[in-house]
Image (tube, rainbow, N blue to C red; front, side, top):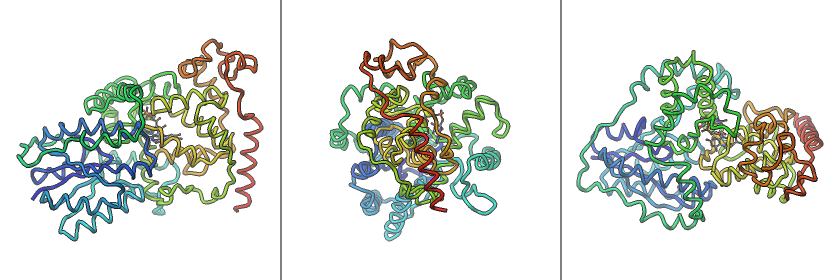
Length: 485
Ligand SMILES: Cc1cc2nc3c(=O)[nH]c(=O)nc-3n(C[C@H](O)[C@H](O)[C@H](O)COP(=O)(O)OP(=O)(O)OC[C@H]3O[C@@H](n4cnc5c(N)ncnc54)[C@H](O)[C@@H]3O)c2cc1C
Protein backbone atom coordinates (compact mmCIF):
# COMPACT_ATOMS: atom_id res chain seq x y z
CA UNK A 1 0.00 0.00 0.00
CA UNK A 2 1.05 3.56 -0.61
CA UNK A 3 0.77 6.88 1.21
CA UNK A 4 -0.37 10.22 -0.14
CA UNK A 5 0.82 13.67 0.93
CA UNK A 6 -1.96 16.25 0.53
CA UNK A 7 -0.20 19.57 -0.13
CA UNK A 8 -2.03 22.74 0.91
CA UNK A 9 -0.25 25.78 2.40
CA UNK A 10 3.01 23.81 2.58
CA UNK A 11 4.37 23.75 -0.97
CA UNK A 12 7.83 22.57 -0.04
CA UNK A 13 9.98 19.51 0.40
CA UNK A 14 12.26 20.58 3.22
CA UNK A 15 10.92 20.60 6.76
CA UNK A 16 7.55 19.25 5.72
CA UNK A 17 6.31 16.84 8.41
CA UNK A 18 3.42 15.51 6.30
CA UNK A 19 5.68 14.68 3.39
CA UNK A 20 8.30 13.09 5.65
CA UNK A 21 5.60 10.93 7.25
CA UNK A 22 4.18 9.92 3.86
CA UNK A 23 7.64 8.80 2.74
CA UNK A 24 8.38 6.92 5.89
CA UNK A 25 6.83 3.65 4.83
CA UNK A 26 7.97 3.69 1.20
CA UNK A 27 6.91 5.37 -2.04
CA UNK A 28 4.32 8.09 -1.89
CA UNK A 29 2.17 10.23 -4.12
CA UNK A 30 1.44 13.88 -3.62
CA UNK A 31 -1.82 15.67 -4.39
CA UNK A 32 -2.82 19.30 -4.73
CA UNK A 33 -6.47 20.30 -5.01
CA UNK A 34 -7.29 23.00 -7.55
CA UNK A 35 -10.53 24.70 -6.46
CA UNK A 36 -11.13 27.86 -8.53
CA UNK A 37 -14.58 28.56 -7.08
CA UNK A 38 -13.19 28.26 -3.56
CA UNK A 39 -10.39 30.70 -4.43
CA UNK A 40 -13.06 33.11 -5.63
CA UNK A 41 -15.06 32.72 -2.40
CA UNK A 42 -11.89 33.38 -0.39
CA UNK A 43 -11.12 36.44 -2.55
CA UNK A 44 -7.68 35.06 -3.39
CA UNK A 45 -5.72 37.56 -5.47
CA UNK A 46 -4.79 36.77 -9.09
CA UNK A 47 -1.18 37.60 -8.09
CA UNK A 48 -1.37 34.96 -5.37
CA UNK A 49 -2.90 32.26 -7.57
CA UNK A 50 -0.32 33.01 -10.25
CA UNK A 51 2.45 32.71 -7.65
CA UNK A 52 1.10 29.42 -6.34
CA UNK A 53 0.86 28.05 -9.85
CA UNK A 54 4.50 28.96 -10.51
CA UNK A 55 5.46 27.35 -7.20
CA UNK A 56 3.62 24.16 -8.12
CA UNK A 57 5.27 24.07 -11.53
CA UNK A 58 8.64 24.01 -9.79
CA UNK A 59 7.50 21.57 -7.11
CA UNK A 60 6.49 18.87 -9.62
CA UNK A 61 10.05 18.08 -10.84
CA UNK A 62 11.50 18.58 -7.36
CA UNK A 63 9.14 15.97 -6.00
CA UNK A 64 9.82 13.68 -8.91
CA UNK A 65 13.49 13.73 -8.00
CA UNK A 66 12.65 12.19 -4.61
CA UNK A 67 10.23 9.71 -6.13
CA UNK A 68 6.96 11.50 -5.44
CA UNK A 69 4.48 12.00 -8.27
CA UNK A 70 2.24 15.03 -7.76
CA UNK A 71 -1.38 14.58 -8.85
CA UNK A 72 -3.88 17.38 -9.33
CA UNK A 73 -7.52 17.11 -8.39
CA UNK A 74 -9.89 19.65 -9.85
CA UNK A 75 -13.02 20.51 -7.86
CA UNK A 76 -15.24 23.57 -7.65
CA UNK A 77 -15.31 24.03 -3.90
CA UNK A 78 -14.07 22.19 -0.83
CA UNK A 79 -17.41 20.44 -0.49
CA UNK A 80 -16.31 18.14 -3.29
CA UNK A 81 -12.94 17.37 -1.72
CA UNK A 82 -13.86 14.35 0.46
CA UNK A 83 -15.31 12.31 -2.42
CA UNK A 84 -12.69 13.39 -4.93
CA UNK A 85 -9.87 12.50 -2.57
CA UNK A 86 -11.49 9.19 -1.64
CA UNK A 87 -11.77 8.25 -5.33
CA UNK A 88 -8.16 9.18 -5.97
CA UNK A 89 -6.98 7.12 -2.99
CA UNK A 90 -8.88 4.11 -4.25
CA UNK A 91 -7.49 4.47 -7.77
CA UNK A 92 -3.93 4.78 -6.46
CA UNK A 93 -4.45 2.17 -3.73
CA UNK A 94 -3.49 4.60 -1.03
CA UNK A 95 -4.20 3.64 2.58
CA UNK A 96 -2.98 6.74 4.43
CA UNK A 97 -3.19 10.44 3.61
CA UNK A 98 -0.86 12.84 5.43
CA UNK A 99 -1.39 16.59 5.63
CA UNK A 100 -0.18 19.57 7.65
CA UNK A 101 -3.00 21.04 9.71
CA UNK A 102 -4.58 24.35 8.70
CA UNK A 103 -6.28 26.45 11.34
CA UNK A 104 -9.17 28.31 9.74
CA UNK A 105 -12.67 27.11 10.62
CA UNK A 106 -13.63 26.10 7.06
CA UNK A 107 -10.32 24.35 6.49
CA UNK A 108 -10.90 22.34 9.66
CA UNK A 109 -14.46 21.49 8.63
CA UNK A 110 -13.19 20.37 5.21
CA UNK A 111 -10.62 18.13 6.89
CA UNK A 112 -13.13 16.67 9.34
CA UNK A 113 -15.52 15.65 6.58
CA UNK A 114 -12.63 14.31 4.50
CA UNK A 115 -11.51 12.27 7.49
CA UNK A 116 -15.00 10.75 7.84
CA UNK A 117 -15.39 9.99 4.13
CA UNK A 118 -11.94 8.40 3.85
CA UNK A 119 -12.59 6.31 6.95
CA UNK A 120 -15.59 4.71 5.20
CA UNK A 121 -13.12 3.15 2.76
CA UNK A 122 -10.61 2.25 5.46
CA UNK A 123 -8.30 5.12 4.57
CA UNK A 124 -6.66 7.14 7.33
CA UNK A 125 -6.18 10.94 7.27
CA UNK A 126 -3.31 11.93 9.55
CA UNK A 127 -2.67 15.58 10.50
CA UNK A 128 0.79 17.01 11.29
CA UNK A 129 1.97 20.37 12.53
CA UNK A 130 4.02 21.92 9.76
CA UNK A 131 2.52 25.38 9.40
CA UNK A 132 3.35 26.85 12.79
CA UNK A 133 6.29 26.73 15.16
CA UNK A 134 4.16 25.20 17.89
CA UNK A 135 0.78 23.50 17.56
CA UNK A 136 -2.05 26.00 18.25
CA UNK A 137 -3.66 25.15 21.55
CA UNK A 138 -0.32 24.30 23.19
CA UNK A 139 0.55 27.89 24.12
CA UNK A 140 -2.05 29.08 26.62
CA UNK A 141 -2.38 31.26 29.70
CA UNK A 142 -2.53 29.88 33.25
CA UNK A 143 -6.34 29.93 32.87
CA UNK A 144 -6.14 27.70 29.82
CA UNK A 145 -7.17 30.54 27.50
CA UNK A 146 -5.56 31.54 24.25
CA UNK A 147 -3.29 34.52 24.76
CA UNK A 148 -4.89 37.74 23.52
CA UNK A 149 -1.83 39.86 24.28
CA UNK A 150 1.28 39.44 22.18
CA UNK A 151 4.16 40.01 24.64
CA UNK A 152 3.32 37.23 27.13
CA UNK A 153 2.46 34.97 24.18
CA UNK A 154 5.86 35.58 22.61
CA UNK A 155 7.66 34.95 25.91
CA UNK A 156 5.81 31.67 26.39
CA UNK A 157 6.68 30.68 22.81
CA UNK A 158 10.36 31.45 23.26
CA UNK A 159 10.51 29.29 26.38
CA UNK A 160 8.75 26.38 24.70
CA UNK A 161 10.76 26.74 21.52
CA UNK A 162 14.05 26.64 23.36
CA UNK A 163 13.30 23.07 24.36
CA UNK A 164 11.68 22.12 21.06
CA UNK A 165 14.48 23.51 18.90
CA UNK A 166 16.95 21.10 20.40
CA UNK A 167 14.85 18.10 19.42
CA UNK A 168 12.89 18.66 16.27
CA UNK A 169 14.51 21.44 14.33
CA UNK A 170 18.19 20.48 14.19
CA UNK A 171 19.23 18.92 11.97
CA UNK A 172 16.59 19.71 9.35
CA UNK A 173 15.69 16.41 7.79
CA UNK A 174 16.55 15.76 4.19
CA UNK A 175 14.27 13.22 2.63
CA UNK A 176 15.50 9.93 1.26
CA UNK A 177 15.69 9.77 -2.52
CA UNK A 178 13.41 7.09 -3.91
CA UNK A 179 13.14 5.51 -7.31
CA UNK A 180 10.07 6.68 -9.22
CA UNK A 181 8.05 3.56 -9.94
CA UNK A 182 6.62 3.29 -13.44
CA UNK A 183 2.89 3.88 -12.79
CA UNK A 184 3.47 6.94 -10.58
CA UNK A 185 3.45 9.68 -13.14
CA UNK A 186 2.91 13.28 -12.12
CA UNK A 187 0.11 15.18 -13.81
CA UNK A 188 1.10 17.86 -16.24
CA UNK A 189 0.02 21.05 -14.53
CA UNK A 190 -0.41 23.08 -17.69
CA UNK A 191 -3.37 20.98 -18.85
CA UNK A 192 -5.32 22.19 -15.83
CA UNK A 193 -4.24 25.73 -15.81
CA UNK A 194 -5.32 27.91 -18.76
CA UNK A 195 -8.96 28.03 -17.73
CA UNK A 196 -8.26 29.62 -14.36
CA UNK A 197 -5.46 31.77 -15.72
CA UNK A 198 -7.80 33.27 -18.27
CA UNK A 199 -10.24 34.05 -15.47
CA UNK A 200 -7.60 35.87 -13.47
CA UNK A 201 -7.24 38.69 -15.94
CA UNK A 202 -3.56 39.43 -15.31
CA UNK A 203 -1.92 41.23 -18.22
CA UNK A 204 1.32 39.93 -19.77
CA UNK A 205 3.09 42.89 -18.24
CA UNK A 206 1.75 42.13 -14.75
CA UNK A 207 2.72 38.47 -15.05
CA UNK A 208 6.21 39.47 -16.14
CA UNK A 209 6.63 41.85 -13.19
CA UNK A 210 5.28 39.35 -10.68
CA UNK A 211 7.54 36.59 -12.00
CA UNK A 212 10.56 38.87 -11.80
CA UNK A 213 9.78 40.27 -8.37
CA UNK A 214 8.66 37.03 -6.76
CA UNK A 215 10.62 34.07 -8.14
CA UNK A 216 8.93 30.84 -7.05
CA UNK A 217 11.64 28.22 -6.85
CA UNK A 218 12.74 26.65 -3.58
CA UNK A 219 16.33 27.63 -4.42
CA UNK A 220 15.31 31.29 -4.77
CA UNK A 221 13.65 31.33 -1.39
CA UNK A 222 16.55 29.51 0.29
CA UNK A 223 18.93 32.09 -1.14
CA UNK A 224 16.65 34.95 -0.02
CA UNK A 225 16.37 33.54 3.50
CA UNK A 226 20.11 32.89 3.77
CA UNK A 227 21.04 36.30 2.43
CA UNK A 228 18.64 38.08 4.78
CA UNK A 229 19.56 36.14 7.91
CA UNK A 230 23.29 36.53 7.35
CA UNK A 231 23.60 40.31 7.14
CA UNK A 232 20.49 42.54 6.78
CA UNK A 233 18.82 40.95 9.80
CA UNK A 234 21.25 42.86 12.00
CA UNK A 235 19.92 46.15 10.62
CA UNK A 236 16.30 44.99 10.77
CA UNK A 237 15.34 46.94 13.89
CA UNK A 238 16.72 50.17 12.46
CA UNK A 239 15.41 49.81 8.91
CA UNK A 240 12.21 47.80 9.08
CA UNK A 241 9.93 50.83 9.23
CA UNK A 242 11.43 52.62 6.23
CA UNK A 243 9.47 51.70 3.10
CA UNK A 244 12.11 53.13 0.76
CA UNK A 245 14.74 50.73 2.14
CA UNK A 246 14.92 46.99 1.49
CA UNK A 247 15.04 46.51 5.27
CA UNK A 248 12.61 43.60 5.65
CA UNK A 249 12.96 40.03 4.39
CA UNK A 250 10.14 40.09 1.80
CA UNK A 251 9.54 36.44 2.63
CA UNK A 252 5.81 36.76 3.29
CA UNK A 253 4.58 35.18 0.00
CA UNK A 254 6.85 32.22 0.70
CA UNK A 255 5.63 31.81 4.25
CA UNK A 256 2.00 32.16 3.16
CA UNK A 257 2.32 29.46 0.48
CA UNK A 258 4.53 27.33 2.71
CA UNK A 259 7.42 27.35 0.24
CA UNK A 260 9.44 28.05 3.35
CA UNK A 261 8.45 27.06 6.88
CA UNK A 262 8.42 29.35 9.91
CA UNK A 263 10.67 26.81 11.61
CA UNK A 264 13.20 27.13 8.81
CA UNK A 265 13.14 30.93 9.17
CA UNK A 266 13.70 30.66 12.89
CA UNK A 267 16.43 28.08 12.47
CA UNK A 268 18.35 30.17 9.93
CA UNK A 269 17.97 33.38 11.94
CA UNK A 270 19.44 31.73 15.02
CA UNK A 271 22.04 29.53 13.34
CA UNK A 272 23.43 32.15 10.97
CA UNK A 273 23.96 34.46 13.91
CA UNK A 274 24.97 31.82 16.48
CA UNK A 275 22.39 33.02 18.96
CA UNK A 276 19.98 31.48 21.41
CA UNK A 277 16.20 32.02 21.09
CA UNK A 278 15.99 33.56 24.56
CA UNK A 279 19.15 35.66 24.26
CA UNK A 280 19.07 36.90 20.71
CA UNK A 281 20.79 40.08 19.57
CA UNK A 282 18.74 43.15 18.67
CA UNK A 283 17.98 42.69 14.95
CA UNK A 284 17.46 38.95 15.27
CA UNK A 285 15.23 39.40 18.30
CA UNK A 286 13.01 41.89 16.48
CA UNK A 287 12.73 39.72 13.36
CA UNK A 288 11.95 36.59 15.38
CA UNK A 289 9.23 38.63 17.07
CA UNK A 290 7.63 39.20 13.64
CA UNK A 291 7.68 35.45 12.99
CA UNK A 292 5.98 35.16 16.38
CA UNK A 293 3.31 37.71 15.36
CA UNK A 294 2.52 35.37 12.50
CA UNK A 295 2.34 32.55 15.04
CA UNK A 296 0.14 34.64 17.38
CA UNK A 297 -2.47 35.23 14.68
CA UNK A 298 -2.44 31.56 13.60
CA UNK A 299 -3.08 30.47 17.18
CA UNK A 300 -5.88 33.02 17.55
CA UNK A 301 -7.49 31.81 14.32
CA UNK A 302 -7.51 28.32 15.76
CA UNK A 303 -8.76 29.42 19.18
CA UNK A 304 -11.50 31.79 17.96
CA UNK A 305 -13.52 30.29 15.08
CA UNK A 306 -15.44 33.57 14.82
CA UNK A 307 -12.34 35.12 13.22
CA UNK A 308 -12.81 32.82 10.23
CA UNK A 309 -16.33 34.25 10.00
CA UNK A 310 -14.78 37.74 9.92
CA UNK A 311 -16.35 38.71 13.24
CA UNK A 312 -14.45 41.13 15.50
CA UNK A 313 -12.46 39.47 18.25
CA UNK A 314 -13.68 42.09 20.72
CA UNK A 315 -17.43 41.61 21.12
CA UNK A 316 -17.80 45.15 22.50
CA UNK A 317 -16.86 46.56 19.11
CA UNK A 318 -19.70 44.70 17.34
CA UNK A 319 -22.20 47.16 15.99
CA UNK A 320 -19.90 50.18 15.54
CA UNK A 321 -21.61 52.29 12.92
CA UNK A 322 -19.16 52.57 10.04
CA UNK A 323 -19.63 55.17 7.33
CA UNK A 324 -20.99 53.98 4.01
CA UNK A 325 -19.03 56.14 1.58
CA UNK A 326 -18.42 54.28 -1.71
CA UNK A 327 -16.67 57.26 -3.35
CA UNK A 328 -14.16 57.61 -0.51
CA UNK A 329 -13.55 53.86 -0.50
CA UNK A 330 -12.98 53.96 -4.25
CA UNK A 331 -10.45 56.79 -3.85
CA UNK A 332 -8.62 54.73 -1.20
CA UNK A 333 -8.53 51.63 -3.45
CA UNK A 334 -7.27 53.62 -6.42
CA UNK A 335 -4.63 55.58 -4.53
CA UNK A 336 -6.42 58.89 -5.05
CA UNK A 337 -7.08 60.06 -1.50
CA UNK A 338 -4.83 63.12 -1.80
CA UNK A 339 -2.65 61.82 1.09
CA UNK A 340 0.62 61.01 -0.72
CA UNK A 341 1.89 58.21 1.54
CA UNK A 342 -1.50 56.45 1.43
CA UNK A 343 -1.76 56.76 -2.34
CA UNK A 344 1.82 55.60 -2.93
CA UNK A 345 1.25 52.57 -0.69
CA UNK A 346 -1.99 51.60 -2.45
CA UNK A 347 -0.28 51.83 -5.82
CA UNK A 348 2.53 49.59 -4.55
CA UNK A 349 -0.08 47.03 -3.47
CA UNK A 350 -1.88 46.96 -6.79
CA UNK A 351 1.33 46.81 -8.78
CA UNK A 352 3.46 44.36 -6.76
CA UNK A 353 0.81 42.40 -4.87
CA UNK A 354 2.72 43.39 -1.73
CA UNK A 355 2.90 46.33 0.65
CA UNK A 356 5.43 47.24 3.32
CA UNK A 357 4.20 46.53 6.87
CA UNK A 358 4.42 50.14 8.09
CA UNK A 359 2.32 51.18 5.11
CA UNK A 360 -0.24 48.43 5.69
CA UNK A 361 -0.77 49.88 9.15
CA UNK A 362 -0.96 53.46 7.84
CA UNK A 363 -3.47 52.76 5.07
CA UNK A 364 -5.56 50.45 7.27
CA UNK A 365 -5.77 53.00 10.03
CA UNK A 366 -6.56 55.78 7.57
CA UNK A 367 -9.44 53.73 6.14
CA UNK A 368 -10.88 52.58 9.46
CA UNK A 369 -10.33 55.76 11.50
CA UNK A 370 -10.05 58.86 9.31
CA UNK A 371 -12.60 57.58 6.81
CA UNK A 372 -14.38 55.44 9.44
CA UNK A 373 -15.07 52.82 6.78
CA UNK A 374 -15.69 49.21 7.85
CA UNK A 375 -12.44 47.23 8.20
CA UNK A 376 -14.05 44.28 6.37
CA UNK A 377 -13.91 46.30 3.14
CA UNK A 378 -10.20 46.92 3.51
CA UNK A 379 -9.57 43.32 4.54
CA UNK A 380 -11.29 42.08 1.38
CA UNK A 381 -9.51 44.54 -0.89
CA UNK A 382 -6.17 43.46 0.55
CA UNK A 383 -6.99 39.77 -0.01
CA UNK A 384 -7.99 40.55 -3.58
CA UNK A 385 -4.54 42.01 -4.25
CA UNK A 386 -1.98 40.51 -1.88
CA UNK A 387 0.42 37.87 -3.14
CA UNK A 388 0.93 36.93 0.53
CA UNK A 389 -2.79 37.06 1.39
CA UNK A 390 -3.28 34.98 4.52
CA UNK A 391 -6.48 34.90 6.54
CA UNK A 392 -4.82 34.84 9.97
CA UNK A 393 -2.30 37.66 9.33
CA UNK A 394 -4.61 39.78 7.20
CA UNK A 395 -7.54 39.56 9.58
CA UNK A 396 -5.16 40.12 12.50
CA UNK A 397 -3.60 43.18 10.85
CA UNK A 398 -6.96 44.71 9.98
CA UNK A 399 -8.44 44.10 13.41
CA UNK A 400 -5.27 45.54 14.98
CA UNK A 401 -5.64 48.71 12.92
CA UNK A 402 -9.40 48.97 13.48
CA UNK A 403 -9.02 48.46 17.27
CA UNK A 404 -11.40 45.50 17.21
CA UNK A 405 -8.86 42.69 17.66
CA UNK A 406 -6.33 41.10 19.98
CA UNK A 407 -3.75 43.45 21.45
CA UNK A 408 -4.86 46.00 18.89
CA UNK A 409 -4.06 49.69 18.67
CA UNK A 410 -6.21 51.60 21.22
CA UNK A 411 -8.99 53.44 19.37
CA UNK A 412 -7.74 56.83 20.51
CA UNK A 413 -4.17 56.30 19.25
CA UNK A 414 -4.64 57.15 15.61
CA UNK A 415 -1.69 57.47 13.26
CA UNK A 416 -1.48 60.78 11.46
CA UNK A 417 -0.48 59.62 7.95
CA UNK A 418 1.31 62.89 7.17
CA UNK A 419 3.47 62.70 10.33
CA UNK A 420 4.09 59.00 9.67
CA UNK A 421 5.18 59.89 6.17
CA UNK A 422 7.62 62.58 7.39
CA UNK A 423 9.02 60.19 9.98
CA UNK A 424 9.43 57.05 7.90
CA UNK A 425 9.94 58.43 4.39
CA UNK A 426 11.57 61.79 5.26
CA UNK A 427 12.87 62.57 1.78
CA UNK A 428 9.80 61.21 0.05
CA UNK A 429 11.85 58.61 -1.82
CA UNK A 430 9.10 56.00 -1.54
CA UNK A 431 6.37 58.50 -2.42
CA UNK A 432 8.21 59.66 -5.52
CA UNK A 433 8.75 56.09 -6.69
CA UNK A 434 5.00 55.41 -6.78
CA UNK A 435 3.68 58.92 -7.41
CA UNK A 436 6.04 60.27 -10.10
CA UNK A 437 3.71 63.24 -10.53
CA UNK A 438 5.05 64.54 -7.18
CA UNK A 439 8.73 64.04 -8.09
CA UNK A 440 9.46 67.78 -8.27
CA UNK A 441 8.37 68.49 -4.68
CA UNK A 442 10.89 69.16 -1.91
CA UNK A 443 11.11 67.33 1.44
CA UNK A 444 8.95 69.93 3.17
CA UNK A 445 5.96 69.71 0.85
CA UNK A 446 6.07 66.13 -0.47
CA UNK A 447 4.07 64.77 2.50
CA UNK A 448 1.26 67.30 2.18
CA UNK A 449 1.49 69.50 -0.94
CA UNK A 450 -0.15 72.93 -0.88
CA UNK A 451 -3.43 73.45 -2.81
CA UNK A 452 -1.50 75.37 -5.46
CA UNK A 453 1.06 72.59 -5.90
CA UNK A 454 -1.70 70.02 -6.10
CA UNK A 455 -3.44 72.01 -8.79
CA UNK A 456 -0.32 72.46 -10.89
CA UNK A 457 0.72 68.80 -10.53
CA UNK A 458 -2.81 67.51 -11.11
CA UNK A 459 -2.82 65.78 -7.73
CA UNK A 460 -6.16 65.67 -5.82
CA UNK A 461 -7.01 67.57 -2.65
CA UNK A 462 -7.19 65.38 0.47
CA UNK A 463 -10.60 63.67 0.60
CA UNK A 464 -10.82 64.16 4.35
CA UNK A 465 -9.59 66.59 6.98
CA UNK A 466 -7.20 64.61 9.19
CA UNK A 467 -7.84 66.53 12.40
CA UNK A 468 -11.63 66.55 12.45
CA UNK A 469 -11.89 62.98 11.12
CA UNK A 470 -9.63 61.83 13.95
CA UNK A 471 -11.97 63.42 16.49
CA UNK A 472 -14.99 61.88 14.71
CA UNK A 473 -13.46 58.39 14.99
CA UNK A 474 -12.59 58.77 18.66
CA UNK A 475 -16.08 60.06 19.48
CA UNK A 476 -17.72 57.21 17.54
CA UNK A 477 -15.70 54.56 19.36
CA UNK A 478 -16.13 56.24 22.75
CA UNK A 479 -19.89 56.50 22.35
CA UNK A 480 -20.25 52.95 21.13
CA UNK A 481 -18.06 51.39 23.80
CA UNK A 482 -19.95 53.32 26.51
CA UNK A 483 -23.32 52.15 25.21
CA UNK A 484 -22.18 48.53 24.98
CA UNK A 485 -21.03 48.42 28.63
C1 LIG B 1 -3.62 45.52 7.64
C2 LIG B 1 -2.56 44.46 7.55
C3 LIG B 1 -2.75 43.36 6.73
C4 LIG B 1 -1.77 42.36 6.64
N1 LIG B 1 -1.99 41.25 5.83
C5 LIG B 1 -1.07 40.26 5.76
C6 LIG B 1 -1.28 39.11 4.96
O1 LIG B 1 -2.33 38.93 4.34
N2 LIG B 1 -0.29 38.18 4.90
C7 LIG B 1 0.89 38.31 5.60
O2 LIG B 1 1.76 37.43 5.51
N3 LIG B 1 1.10 39.38 6.40
C8 LIG B 1 0.17 40.37 6.50
N4 LIG B 1 0.41 41.45 7.30
C9 LIG B 1 1.62 41.48 8.14
C10 LIG B 1 2.86 42.17 7.53
O3 LIG B 1 2.53 43.42 7.00
C11 LIG B 1 3.54 41.33 6.44
O4 LIG B 1 3.73 40.01 6.89
C12 LIG B 1 4.91 41.93 6.10
O5 LIG B 1 4.76 43.23 5.61
C13 LIG B 1 5.59 41.06 5.07
O6 LIG B 1 6.82 41.61 4.72
P1 LIG B 1 8.17 40.84 5.01
O7 LIG B 1 8.07 39.44 4.55
O8 LIG B 1 9.27 41.67 4.45
O9 LIG B 1 8.19 40.85 6.60
P2 LIG B 1 9.35 40.81 7.68
O10 LIG B 1 9.31 42.10 8.41
O11 LIG B 1 10.64 40.38 7.15
O12 LIG B 1 8.78 39.68 8.69
C14 LIG B 1 9.05 38.29 8.50
C15 LIG B 1 7.75 37.52 8.44
O13 LIG B 1 7.06 37.62 9.67
C16 LIG B 1 5.64 37.62 9.42
N5 LIG B 1 5.09 38.89 9.89
C17 LIG B 1 5.71 40.08 9.95
N6 LIG B 1 4.91 41.02 10.47
C18 LIG B 1 3.75 40.41 10.74
C19 LIG B 1 2.51 40.84 11.30
N7 LIG B 1 2.32 42.10 11.72
N8 LIG B 1 1.52 39.94 11.41
C20 LIG B 1 1.69 38.66 11.02
N9 LIG B 1 2.83 38.19 10.50
C21 LIG B 1 3.85 39.05 10.37
C22 LIG B 1 5.45 37.48 7.92
O14 LIG B 1 5.26 36.12 7.62
C23 LIG B 1 6.77 37.99 7.39
O15 LIG B 1 7.10 37.49 6.11
C24 LIG B 1 -0.58 42.47 7.41
C25 LIG B 1 -0.39 43.59 8.23
C26 LIG B 1 -1.36 44.57 8.30
C27 LIG B 1 -1.14 45.75 9.20
